[in-house]
Image 1: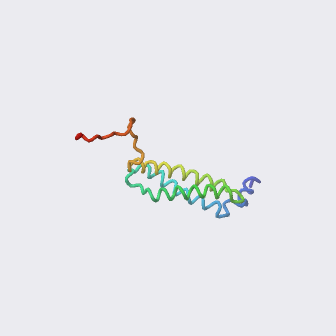
Image 2 (image 1 turned 120 degrees about the vertical axis):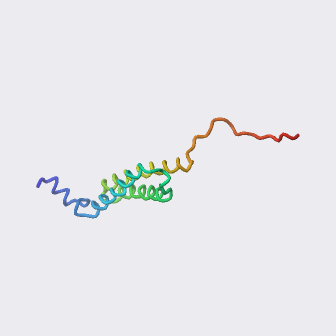
Image 3 (image 1 turned 60 degrees about the vertical axis):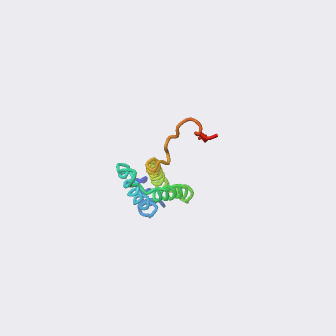
Length: 114
């Protein structure tokens, strides 16, 4: 075995630890979300997608702050954040939260009777 591979195997975030297998299992969430991008936006749960956005953002920070830093966990949750934000934008467009507003001021209705 090469020295670099042996060092990876025995590292604090290597494949002998949960710091490795946790992010590997989280890729299932990302792959499922990418597959869901082909489904109609009406099927998206805005609440669940919002929770997943917050969850991933918190874990990106956790992976950065924990010692030893877990770059694999950070990359995993960064990818999940991107996919979930895309899904949230699809949901918001379907719910008409992101409609373009017409240019021009407000319409003022006047009373035809003096």
